[in-house]
Image (cartoon, rainbow, N blue to C red):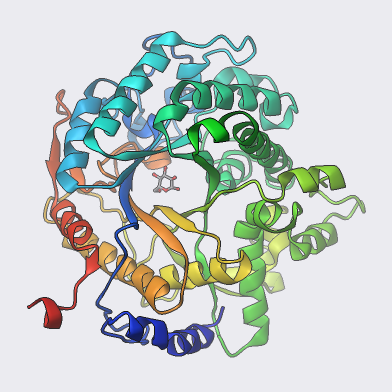
Length: 505
Ligand code: BGC
């Protein structure tokens, strides 16, 4: 969507906002005072490997991130998640700080290799079930709704060695794991997420190879593995629908990550087309099958075919039966959003710099505006209006499905407690989310900060920090210390947004 269309959209939707009595500004960079309804859910997020530690305790088996870290040479300073925030033992401290902030929900993930250490035999680890039951029961007691992700990147090593996502039997094994999770915890979990960021799993794990297990096959494996991940997702959703929905009334979906893709020159139709292509290759790759028609986006099929010289596209095909089975396997839209990219058609010079495969297939040159402020992470630029842009993209492309923002946040390198940069990032991104809801009519049901605590930031180890609580990784107690951003977020939650100072006084 061009910036101009966004602006026009805002102008045309002033009316409902005015009716709700908000102080209105349709302008992109002007701060907007407005509140979200009481039903809107505010939360924070973590993932098992990034916080739990206890990597080989109580029967847990090795997973691909254990292997990747222990091999050495892949992660900054050769850090590991062996201990991380030690949340496996210190989960009570996590519940305490969740209470302190006053969140409505907590997004966490389960460890497959804890619950079903050997997916080939399928034997369930009772100690792991008991552990997660304790955590979930404590959340219930605190009045915090859990949003539970089944798979946040920690594939049991046994499965990686068994043909990884390319072995079709993984679909049954994932369904079995989902069955264990739904059956054991379904009475305590209102929201389930099957996969966190299949784009990262497939592209960074098996294409670019900077994430575990570090495989670099950009031409084939991301497409092949994504195909089975989508089937795993669909089969878990159908399982819940068939076997658990009537009993537990929960909701099941997937979390997709995406930048907002904006045309570098909004007045150039080629740039506008390139940004739509980038969005379809990144978000549409997974969203189109699940939220639209059971199949990959048409533009993706065309462009991958065009770059598959043997005549046989590297993008696999779903049968029409599979398409019917995949389409509609959602109850909401999980969105992770951090940053924005500018798009224009790739010229020959740019194409020569990207490896044959996913990036080259897209034929889009991605860039950042040099005036954008960059965070500590290479991909993370402060572009708050991108939040409003991507929410509107989802509204228009996926029938205004209810969106739960499952991650948003920002890094620094030092973990300072006086994190005014994080306050500024959260303040401006949340404000754009409020604009999207109040001015544009986007159907957003919740927002989740990544992360409640500083934690293991994948290939960056502990050199990049996202927490609204500080953790000293040399402190054996791993004390959680509030940063300014945690107090800021507590206030936003209590206020349910940004009350107009003119009204509140
Ligand atoms: C992931 C998180 C990660 C965060 C910040 C997301 O891609 O889901 O696990 O820590 O981004 O990089």
